[in-house]
Image (cartoon, rainbow, N blue to C red; front, side):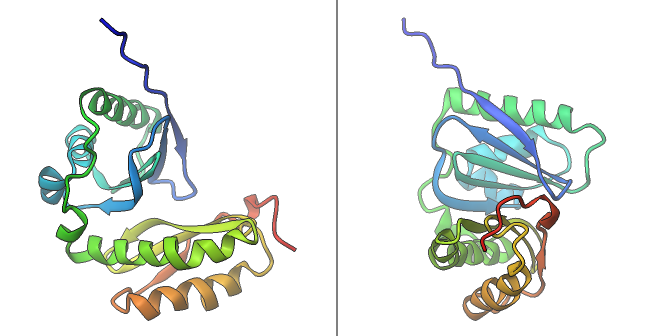
Length: 198
């Protein structure tokens, strides 16, 4: 009988204090997909459904590559407990299944989740390839209805041109393709940037 390979997961708090990022030692999903609808998750995303069942007050789950970002409705009193439960849930799920999303999940998205994922496609396909030439990137950290909270990283974090990039680049590109988005907010901890592009 072969021994099951141990799954390594790390948990990292985020600039938005109601978020926690889990890094997993294997690929979970090609691209990025966010879900906040528990009923949708039960039909289309077994991993998200397991997290909704395990974490009281879970607002949403984003799976992207080797990462799982969870957003809680309120900042937990003790993130260590939430991180342990979230990490254990992800590990237990992956020990039993590799089907994070069922076929047709993207086409079944609706409402605010559909809007957020349309904005994510613009970020992945248009914005991040251009920002990568400067050593930077952007990502959606959270959403609230039709509002998006976007953070900048790499060379964009702390860069003197970050505000202009956000307003004239990121915001314009998203609004042109996803006009239903209302507020676009900068959630970057710019003071933490150590390698701005000059």
